[in-house]
Image (cartoon, rainbow, N blue to C red; front, side, top):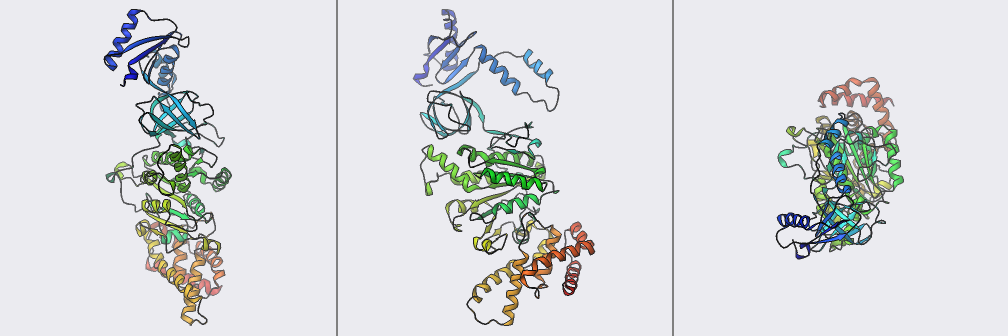
Length: 576
């Protein structure tokens, strides 16, 4: 303890006797060492007791302080659905007040959601502080003489000289089944007007990622229902697949379509909105409700109107909720929309905390804030319950620049990316997936055998078409083989178009891929390919459901089934 802290002060409405002072000195000497001096100051705030302050630590032995002890003890009671009254009665009867030191500091400066605090020598990074106004904050900067703290509420009632104390706890959020179907803020409080949420427990928002021994390979598909993705860039349970592209190119649409496609598949979905317009999030919630998807979805909203600290912790809060379900053996899909705005919020905090700016004014640890978040996505081993978290982080690019700072950081963390191209989007190709720049590093391991066999060489065919399309723009005359190749490629691109909120089942995707890749639409005008595909799928469901049943049951596309699909499709298209 430093020299300034060797003077202790007693605040009470009555001056202690010499014998009482000696007992105080004996207590302080045993705890803090020799050389303690004791002063007394009159105060009428501590009726029925006293307040002993030494440095930043405070012993509150007033009636109010002892009541606070009892209140905190009762709040810590967990009964798991049992009658709580007998437990409270027993706790009160057996309670004895304890001499507990509370470390208390003072606010030096406050503004822009940041408070500088002096006096809390033992505060730790990430610890929650409680200000006298009731606002909570989190320690984000440790300096020799003071600490920097981000605030989770308004700083209007906090001023220089205000009291602040340590809680000894790290930031946490409520978790439990009652969160499902609700819209909550970054602290887990409901904001949808649906009433109070009774949590099963609390989890810290920061938690170490599962180790290698606790994981198992990603080999179970998480189907998006989007043909262009499931066929070429499959996503597995436990994978982290980045969705990247310019503003307004359909990034959120892919994520929400994937959520809608999880209906009936025992997957819990969490959508984390970071820095989005509140009206956009409200519309998304309405869309999910109308399609029955909110029944298994949690929406965590830190909108653009929220403070930077709340936008910063939102994805960690969502991940903590996901980990609760993963550790219960469930599969979870979590969408971070988007991490570009998350990085901007963190940059704002860091600059206000006077941290040294680096590239593009981001702090040096901006990579770490995303890596420690995304590494928590995993598929646990069977010994740990076999649950999984699949992450779909979203990143916004400027003019398609995937080599910018934040995009390259997150590309290096994730297991692949789906790149959405503006030119394709505005040309009407939706989803506007760029086949050349998109990749899944899990690949065929996250596909069923039927899908893998049906997809065949679709990526190669599309690449050849795109290359030929560029060259033929300058050619005046084309031979018949080139024309056929161009018509085939155009039909393939049309087949990959898909309306929003209309996911395909795995069997439907297999039928589409088998028919299109067999050149059965070669004589169909490209603009008519999509309607013909919808008619063909209806034909299969009505007259040949046994094929779909076999593929669903086995997960395999046999040579016989493939030949039968081709033959049925050829006859149907000839008749039409």
